[in-house]
Structure formats: structure tokens, C-alpha cells
Length: 192
Figure 1 (cartoon, one colour):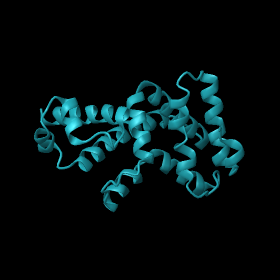
Figure 2 (cartoon, rainbow, N blue to C red):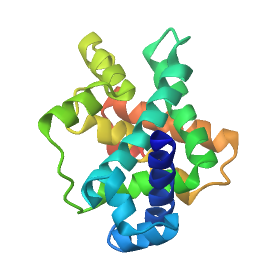
Figure 3 (cartoon, rainbow, N blue to C red):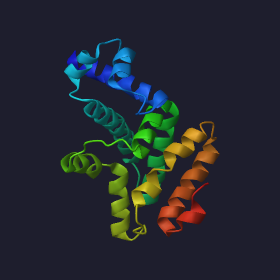
Figure 4 (cartoon, one colour):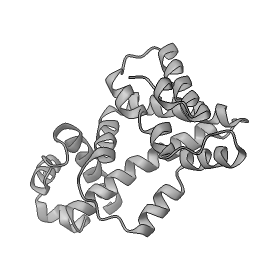
């Protein structure tokens, strides 16, 4: 029951932040969206930062599972990357509110109290990052500064801006991302 209620609060928080942003989503607003008192929210989450962090991790783990499941049968790094990005595009289209929330979390000036251990645990298990590191080690990818940002971050704003992309447009976008990270030609490869 407690786990179900925690997930309910997290989902309501994600939806509220997707609509109002981090700054417009205080504990009173989150509690109202959940039809609970702020004290009840604090029973399940020690602080707003803790609730937001748990919400970010909720989306991150869903994405991680979706990427890992899609990439399992792939034989080449290029196929794995493109399959992972197609999986992310599909996830974004099917979970627009979560994608907006996650995009805001990626670019938010909000000061989240991450500990080095939490960051290592979270991003050390990131399937896209692990895939990119294998590509660098094998020489298939250039070791560009901010490679993860180049290979992964443009997906959210671009797809959210273009929710009605055709499969051909999605493939072209993903091909351009692959070209950027496999050739090191970022500026001429990525869409505007």
C-alpha cells in the first residue's frame, strides 16, 4: 500500500511539474494535486528535493528498462544505438508528460541534492552511456566532450517539438545523431 501511494504521489508530481515547471510546483500544489495534505506528502517523502529526485529516478528507470529491452538482440553498436533511440522516441510519444518532466529536469537550474554515490549508481547503469563508452573503447565512436549530451539529450526537445514525426523522419533524425557521434561532425549532423 505504501509503495502504491508513493508511486501515486510521484505520478501526480510528474504531471504537475510537466504543466507548471519545478518552480510552480511547491509541496502545497503537489499535495492539492494528490488530494492530500502537505503533511501526508512529507510522511512519504522527507522533502520536496527528495520527492523530485525520486520522480526523476522513476522516469529514468522506466527509460533504462525500455532501452535495455530494445537493445538486447542487437549485434552492432550502430544497431544498438539506433534501436535505443527509436525506443526512446516511442517512449516520449507514448509518455509526453513524463518526457516533458524529464526534459525540464535535465535543464532545470533547480539545485537537486544528489550525492556522488547516487549519481554514480544512476548514471553508471545508464545503458546509453555504457554503449557509448564501449564504442569509444572499440574506436567506433569519437571521444567527444559531452558525448552523452550529444548522443541522447537532443532527442527529448526535438521529439516533443515534432510529436507527429513520421517513421521516416524519426529514422532520419536518429541517423543524423549516429552520424554526429560516429564521425565527430556534430554541427553539420544534428538537426536545428
